[in-house]
Length: 94
Image (tube, rainbow, N blue to C red; front, side, top):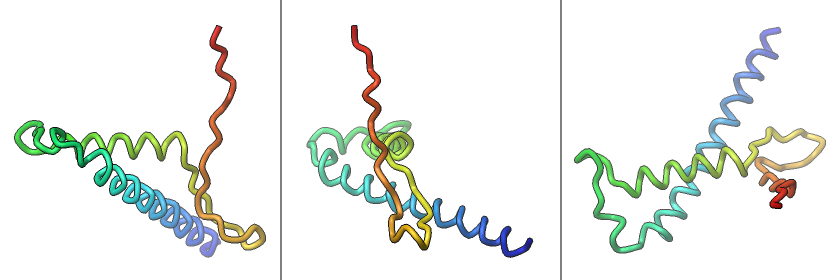
């Protein structure tokens, strides 16, 4: 019983750490692509926060929520830590 509980906690920590890693990668990519736009680095909100940091954080969270699924790899399936979700083609634009 205790081993299952510890394994469950360990799996949750693994999923959380992989989500943080993906967040970090997305944030850095945005910082060095979109963040290089000249006017975006000078905007300050509430005299504390830079606008681009808040924007990149929100965009990264949205991308992780809707497009990235973190998996715990099984020993039988091989090494696959996260997958990109398929976009549904059920959009009926009539």
